Length: 287
Figure 1 (cartoon, rainbow, N blue to C red):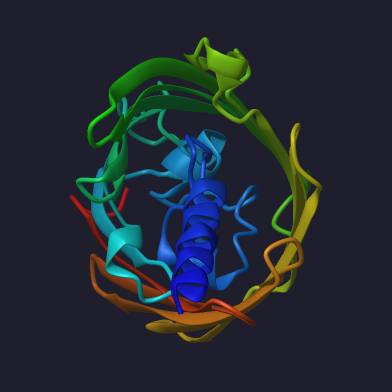
Figure 2: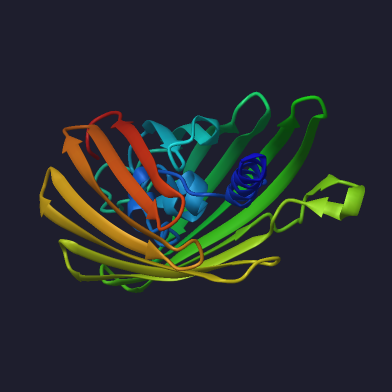
């Protein structure tokens, strides 16, 4: 029995380490339901954490909260608060559909419990020029272990999205922690550097297909894919897969005027269920 207990603790520790360790993770239940294939999602508040370039398509201020629980384990909770603000107003009579001076984003996020936790404060900025969106983000990361203290570092990230075929095909790329931020001198421990690239395709206005690959320089590549279908204006359903983590996912999104609620569930064949929920609110009238 003690051996089984120790083995279980080691397994959970490994899961927690792989799930975070300063890695970018996933933000928003929409992305989670799509198998974490979110590098091409634009006009979404949670692009602030998935690919900051996607903020450039927001036209109104937006705030949101996000909560996640992994494998129904209380110690593996993740929570985030985000806000985005389009900068400037288009001149009267302009046909442009993006903010003239780009979009600024803020995210506060925390994972773990009092024994082990990771916190981050991120600032992002995105700008759209024609069919291309570019963005940059700066993160202040803090890792804390009870009895051992905490470490802080700064990670910089860049992202881009391009409409290869307008309204049909989008290419996205995101490089997280391009400066290879260091966490500790011991064994030269660093925050993971992660490259994500993928495509989003809309065969119709109601259907979105997404696929991407993610490569951590210290791990095997992960392939992800998802599908989203808008049943009616107020209801969207989603499903996805992720190969490296061996997870399938599903979820839905609801819209009530300026309020949006998204739910996503991911199922691992050994570790079980993870749940994701976000609530977003868009401010101001439509442009």
